[in-house]
Image 1 (cartoon, helix red, strand yellow):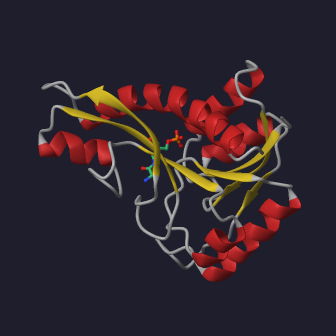
Image 2 (tube, rainbow, N blue to C red):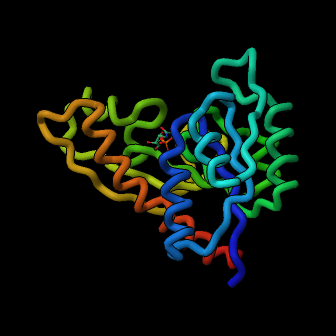
Length: 195
Ligand code: GAR
């Protein structure tokens, strides 16, 4: 099977992108990252990528706090195609993907979400879990559709919520699971698609 070229979209620190890179370096994931894109010029994910010599660029969403404007999505599609991307991985990307991008990569966009979906979609799912007083949450890897964290689920793993957890301590444990689950699911899904 040929190596899969991934495109990563992220808005924040990029620890999941780092975990994907580490899995590639360890020989656990037969892939390369062709490009990393962010809607925030100062997102640490861009710096992490550049340090590894990976093409890292900003998608201009200025003037839009939450929306992912069509023109920005079209620009994203152009950049992903130009980098030869076969599978798009959202890694802490905080805007809703819609038609221009979904149509260009049908069944080729994955996301990682820090809860057991369908519980706690949206922002800061770890905080939602602590505030709801649940005894377990977790991590979900799913295919992206036009809804908010609603696409078909590919894999999930549970994380216990302790009575004394704060949003921060829970998120830290969730991230440990994310960093193992996401690279594994990306490899499995790419193999399923015969990429
Ligand atoms: C991760 O916990 C990811 O699951 C979450 O943002 C964090 C990004 O961390 N994503 C969402 O909440 C998407 N709805 P990272 O930048 O260190 O990978």
